[in-house]
Length: 129
Image (tube, rainbow, N blue to C red):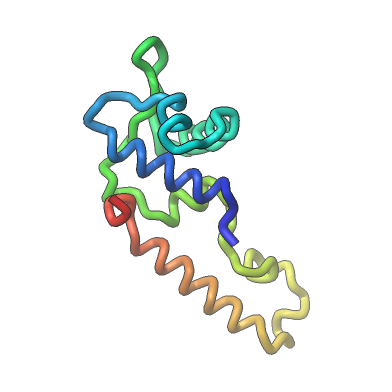
């Protein structure tokens, strides 16, 4: 399940993309318009910024901007920054399951993981806009 952090990351990126022409977007503006807590937004935006998805500017008219055009951001890339793994079950994340060769359901979980990743990689921020 995608957590609030992942959903908020997509909402933040979408909001910034929508207002890109207005100059840098402040967290205060996002928090007020979207009804989100500013402290939680700071945590999410810090990870998006650190990953290079956003650029920040300081000062009175400071805020955040996209580093690229909206069509260059896959939903997968945004969610991976916010969530880490999007695997439906832990045994798909890595070779952590010693029972995988004997597990009747392992292949199904791997296929589901691939479907999810392919879908999210095929959609971009501009598709949401």
